Length: 597
Image (cartoon, rainbow, N blue to C red; front, side):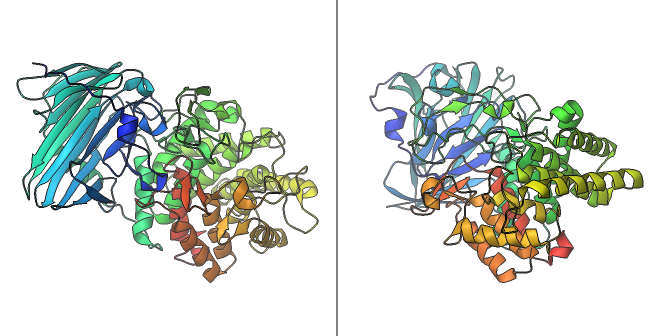
């Protein structure tokens, strides 16, 4: 039977207004992720995959939300179960303490997902209200064909997706709010007890009966068994960064750069991007961080993905792919209101770019795997493909690490040399090793002939005398010696020109103060920590590590940028390469540089 339909006037956007980014948590299973706010409001989830259309799009101005929250006034808090992406929303009410445990069921499958929510009345009874308002297609297609079976289980459709809502949901009713129908549930939980809500979303009609919540929770917690790490600084946060990287990595090995799209880096500045794709550079950062920390599954996934892309595309290696290796779609606007200060887009213009440093990062990743005995025959062939591609293309202009206009970016060329040197050190074939090292020498010498600043430091390009955080990376990756005068001068110049109050910026956009042009770039803060550690400046390195680590939001997630004045996160969430560099810095700063190089 179908429940009676009520009516209402408030939209999901009115009922669940947005929060600052630092207050949002993420649950993920490798194939997709969901962003959850303080009201237990799941305001973002694409289904069935990372780069699919959103089913819950309230975060960027679309319709769609799945919320579980106390019926009474409350104060919000929350935390992750250690070593997992199982989130506990925690609310202190006037009559007790209520938690809602949140997870995407694991292990994941690409075409279907399961959202687990367990309401627990920790102190006193819990009175909660649940709202299930699915709107597929970024809010275009609402709930339809909602039907409650004799077993109390709800079935419905939204766009092309099939939904099934089971557990303690028999009392739900269909209501209408704004343009769409939705399911609402009032749930009373006696003190000390729990109630389960299980939402399944699939591209095909579920063939069997609803799953057992207890079993799903058990298997999911087994999946998130706390990972083993080598000794690190800030071990709890280092472990959390590793877990975030795992949660962003699909079964195909591809790791999305972030779970979201269109969260602005700077209000009303037009810097909005879709990061729900796997960047070769970011994937390589994650793999190298995992190698430094002894987290072998993340290293192996990165190597598997990058190896496959090199075998498929060789010198035409794209900067980014979907997580299963397909091309990134062209960029287009959604015509939604957007997160405040931004506008909504999907796809990414990176699909039109060449980024030379991606080839260098690929070689650095494969060399790290070889150093730990984890590079197979396909991996070695991929390294040969990458070196041949560098030899063929290193003199071409490219878009660079920051994806700007095509130039002879110094970082790109030096990073390619770093990758060649790293592979030469690991290669057993003396002729190949000699040839790779010689090509690295040629690239460094050529770059030095036209891109060394009169002060003795590296400059961004032959045509741009500015400094850049990216210029710290080649020395960290051993393209040059740590005591090379250009290495030392570049670090000192960067600290003087592009840092302020313990925060690091990418490069100078114009004559405005650093913090007015863009936010501090959290990736760069961890780069500074690594560069100082390489120089033996341990106290300064630790200070930079701690300062940058403190920029995470309440759930421990980093975005791309940090607004120093307002102490707020900016950009898509969570940013994988920031978590990768945090993990690497935590591992390397815990030991002598020579032991982790």
